Length: 290
Ligand SMILES: C[S@@+](CC[C@H](N)C(=O)[O-])C[C@H]1O[C@@H](n2cnc3c(N)ncnc32)[C@H](O)[C@@H]1O
Figure (cartoon, protein in one colour):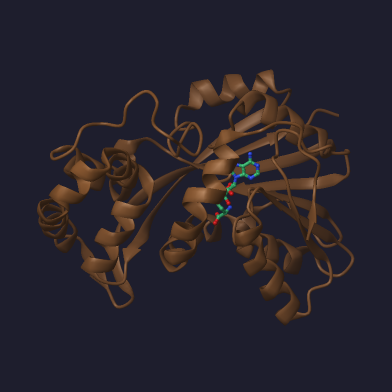
């Protein structure tokens, strides 16, 4: 793994590394399994072929970068980019165990990476919603794309379409105040690209053309057990943010909140591998003009 130069102190990147990394690693089984439903649905349709060069933006644990490396084969190449080494260590280990030689990972803030136009395809699963300046980041990503190359990124649709994140938040808000203006965050947040019109404008400003949206609805795993799901919700996502920001008050009310969450989560569908809830994403594709 190498480290790309980055030209700014980014409080969001610090937040990912300092606060979210240990929590994401704790709940990797939920995050990777859950998010996979949204990429599996569209992987067979991606405009990626053998021999392509591919960039995976905000690649996290690296599972999609590895799938892309298998797709492009030994004559192609994949670069996974993320601002957290601790996530990419998982991808590096998995790629090495599988003997994949066409994949590498680099640590950097996508906003400031010195990209060259060398990629046929850029992918991101839930990695584009957290940039401090989304238009500047999307413009910088475009610099990595060859003329005519496609970017496909997956983002969450609205909170109402994502009860797996929204219902627990509403429950926690029955007990605790909403996060204040100065709340510490990981960036604009999971629903920051839910609005089609706004994202289309943003991507046009960043220079993309042929911007298309496809809706994907899929059940996501929220925990192996009710207890696992409650712990996950109070650690991460919008409910986790309310809980974290409320500090001592949250800990005082933890028992009551857990009872309320257990009632709501216990009502959800149970599968053999755990509890699932509804979720919904946009698969957004756009082209770098020739
Ligand atoms: C919700 S996670 C998605 C991870 C992975 N793509 C997946 O689907 O499992 C968002 C990822 O974006 C990364 N990220 C956030 N802001 C970033 C930035 N400015 N530059 C590079 N990576 C960033 C985070 O470290 C995190 O791994």
